[in-house]
Image: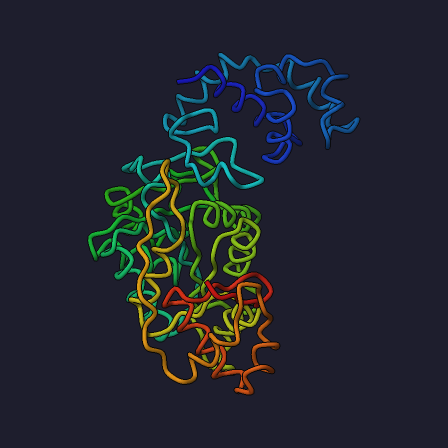
Length: 370
């Protein structure tokens, strides 16, 4: 246990001090103990500390004893991490607003926390179709059997299906909830909750006994995205919490994949929007998806040696597209113009070349030859 963790707890108890301000305090003073003892004048130098925030800090800081607060807090919340703890999930440290306190319950796997074992988020609507359920089960099963841990939010629908399928396949799963880790929501997922505690963990930034609150769930979506190396959106209407998770994933430089559906299906509208904005396409070749997810760089001390492979024989369409590409990135529209092929064929060819490791997609639907 580090001395610093009690100050993460103490600062988090002051109203108006959220994850972003805590990050600024940490960066400005070097540690939160120094920040705790800083004068109002010194605190004023930190971006975001206006008069009202300073007033709250001065009033509330005098009533809090970090040492006693930690002892009392641990009685009700025996298991939690702060960014001062070595076990705190490494990928969450990278985001702009890491939770100052991360409560957990279940079986911890430190390889997940250190980033050595890949985590993939799966999110979607609470009212999926049979199509969405089928693909969620298939993908979660494939991920679990190939060593990935599935991360979701334990909500009804896609979340429930992803957790259940991963565990049935013998894999691990992480549920990020918008309540305390001791509160089961929705109640119908009581059995699922118990299973997750034996095959993974339930985590939350909210302390024990925190009841469901509609404002908590959008916020917890940033944790799903932050923990994951990639986020898969299975089915999502235009107004969906899954799209919030995808937005966070983009902000955190995580890969986003979406399951396509019919253009007149309401549950697929959000996925189609993501695909139009450059999200990767989930298709029936799950092995290709697994290759793509496995190709996401992992947190390693040493740079892995990549063995070169000979260029495969390509179909005329693929050859025409790759001959058009260069080391400098080209826009999707420009590639269509240069090849004279229709948009659907160019999109399909680029996807195949990307899965073969010959092409890389960049933000803004730009592509370059590797």
